[in-house]
Image 1 (tube, each protein chain N blue to C red):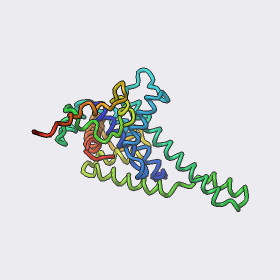
Image 2: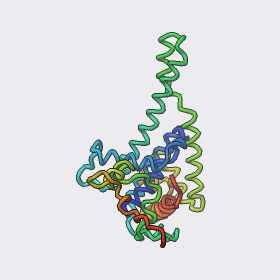
Image 3: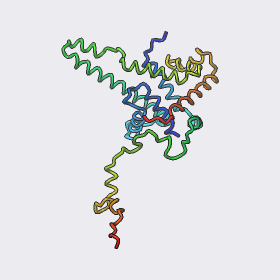
Image 4: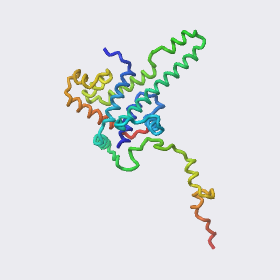
Length: 168
Length: 88
């Protein structure tokens, strides 16, 4: 049962990653980090929550590595420009267009996943805005029961999506 | 107006959805599997599908070594049926 849950979590964290990085890679890397001891589960933290955190780190590290590689190439490509210009370019916080496009596509895909549940859809949008559970309830006018009920539907849809028999 | 980039919004949503799934109960997992007509309790089915190497990496060389006997003769050589004489 744990593995089924972890697969569904890996599929969530692999969303928006480039095509050559699948959910299987994210899950394998998370197992590898735990098995080789580079990540240790703190006492009292449930396995699934811990593994979700590891996969979240893997996703973030992937994008940091992509960004670093892009910056290195930018410096090499512009080897004739001044040192100051190079530094300015390296520190340019402009968003990565590829990542922005992938993110936009994934946001749309998540929207489609919950298209028939308006309450869940509005909660997802609010999560994207960075609102807490209390803020979401207040903003959307939901009682705590309605909010928890919507979360349950959300989990069911995510699990269904995560368990579908698609190879990574 | 929220000025967060699509990447930032996606990160927030995925982190929240990952936490939701981590909190899913066994009953919820079973119910979702049931929706898809899956039987997770059956061996060799859904849970391991898609995993390339769980626990240990695939290393066929190791298996070849372990299947040789003390004289270095491959295990399958012993199982080979002896050649039968031609019928009289």
